[in-house]
Length: 62
Image (cartoon, rainbow, N blue to C red; front, side, top):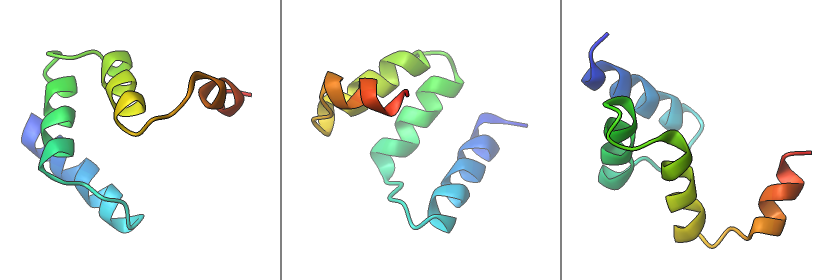
């Protein structure tokens, strides 16, 4: 499956869950799929962007 098809599949899943999937999300997913950015780095960027505290992340792992 090509990267573009994978991105489209992920976008469809987001839309089914009524979650936002904009141009920035599309680019971030492409970067992860093409190994330009690690998944951990992409998640860290999102946590910083949306102000998720480290305490909150620790609780969500339990």
